[in-house]
Length: 444
Length: 170
Image (cartoon, rainbow over all chains, first blue to last red; front, side):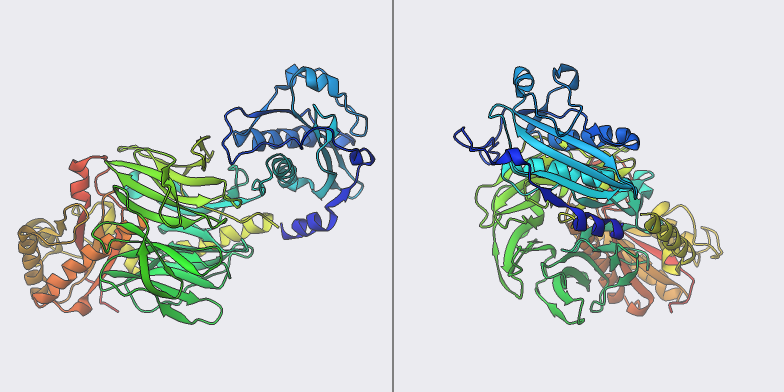
């Protein structure tokens, strides 16, 4: 895996298309403004990429389909079905017949060529076209990797298209760690899995002999923190995703440690420690082993999450009598309550952009995923169900993934995602039950 | 990716062979708590020194109100009986399990379960049971006893269970 990633960065090169330098005639580039909310998805076409070598036909078709799934999956773009296409693209280098794409009202067109070179490497080239302006959007791009890694290349192409059309940072080339769940509700078996953001390429990182909870990515995406009952009692473990080496976090004495989260430096960990039945927040530097107690209250303090600059922590506490959200300095000290709506608030997570806090809210017997500004204003509930909890942010802060569990004896947990506008609620496909997602940073 | 898969099998193998005594307690207490005795412990329900008597006649669990860890008078009565039994049978140790219903987040429920288990611990210690013989654990909402999604089940899931073991506390 790692070897392939190196290949990708080493060989991802821009090739400037000579036709790209023409002056633009429209007022601005083709752009979909999602901050203002999109009602009509932007129609686009993606004919199967051209297979330029004999072995690349299947890959060309599959890569095109994954790109389309990524783009249409955002709810911001609508693919024009391939059976409506008039033009056929048989040569990646030939001029695009814009009139044929205009006729079916494709605003954006993605063309590409796929080949497998002499040393077995997969080479994907693509261009993004503004059909009505009759010009390209950005440079053509070539990506090189292994044929096994074709999905990642497809996600990278889709990321380019998404960024060029929305002006937003991308997020498709990312992964999610989660808890895979099997078995009945009163004897559920749990193990930690990792998969692509779209539910593909699942690999299990732990066995299912012990209860495991809430894995959390490090900022590099190379390590996880999670809680496991494998010693018989809940403890936090640090897991290296590359070699699967694992170590228990050295925390002060207590009944249990749980709810860990990395700081942006990748070394500071905040977590909950329970001692004498009382749960407080602690910090630990995993590089030098130095620890610090952050709260000392008889109430429950848990679910801490750092601000992106590392200066503050948002967390959940029932010091007021019911669980609410608070923000304090990452060194501890006074905390300011930020949640004031009706209901109970938990699992706050700071957006990677820094502007919003996602949370779980319980009100009138229903659960919601919501967002609010860091001062608690502009609270918006994005979802509602019997049990929604545990939000995690996409690397670009546009999408939230969370756990939704269905009601009753046959209740089952599944991952869902929703745009921060509250639109485009979707289930993330998984073979087993799934809970506690944590979204990685964009892969390198 | 192949390397990763192979390594996963190794880890799984290690986990299989690393079964601690604490995990045995868990199985007794969470799978079908109240339905059997810990393995290797003799004695029928009529024998007042038996764990079965402890479970069935004294009662091995107490229940809690929503979000609460306060012991009701009924609960205190049960725990007084547990304390008497533990004081008369010093060869036993106990794991005190705290549980929550499924209303509430995973983290909060873990912390709440710990509060409940500690409320039991505090009461048993106040009745003369040595704290060294007991250890608390919270399962939060991870191991419900009843699996429906209404108050009839929730009220039984908001519990603290005293799980006995004859094994020496090492």
